[in-house]
Amino acid sequence: LDSRALIRIGQVLKVPGAAKATTTTSSTPSTKVPNSFAGRTYSEAVVGAANTNKATLERVGVPSKAEMQRKVARTARAMGLDPALAQAIAFQESGFNHTSVSPANAIGTMQVIPSSGEWASDLVGRHLNLLDPDDNVTAGVAILRSLVRTSPDLPRAIAGYYQGAASVKKYGMFSDTRRYVANVQTLMTRFG
Image (cartoon, rainbow, N blue to C red; front, side, top):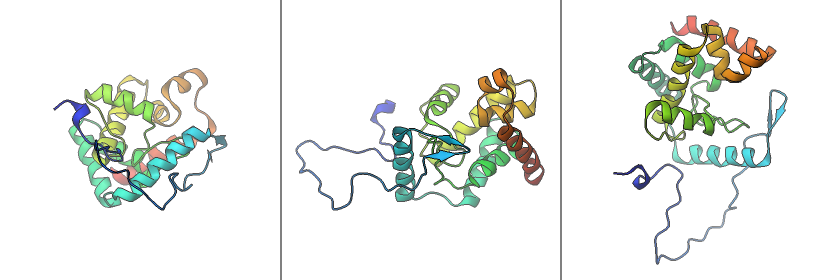
């Protein structure tokens, strides 16, 4: 099947000739995601998308944190990445909670933003749905694997996951990025 023929989590299906659905709930998702994080404020459109994604993840149900941790380790091994690194990133990003969505619309266990999800899809050669637990982990691990391969060292690869590799190269690590890298490296010993 062509990937356009697949039904994705959260997709609205329209049946020709069917009566219009009515609902008594608001058409806008509740505001569970704040509009700022780490001193950065995000646009209404981005935060709106984040709230929609959060509502979808809460509505469909997701695997437990323990199962997500196993998925991260299993996927990292399968893709040739150190499972301790992948688990440390996932724990730092979301605590293995797949319903996590940030104000920047970073989605799921690996906290992947949609534009990075497109890059990850290119890296693995297929469309990845960031709301899907397996695809989310695949996206995060693919991105992390690429950063490890292209960064001068592990701390800058980790920083690239958080801050963006181009930003790290241009500006160096911001103070919050340095804390993030230190936390991830400490967590690696826990998962190693």
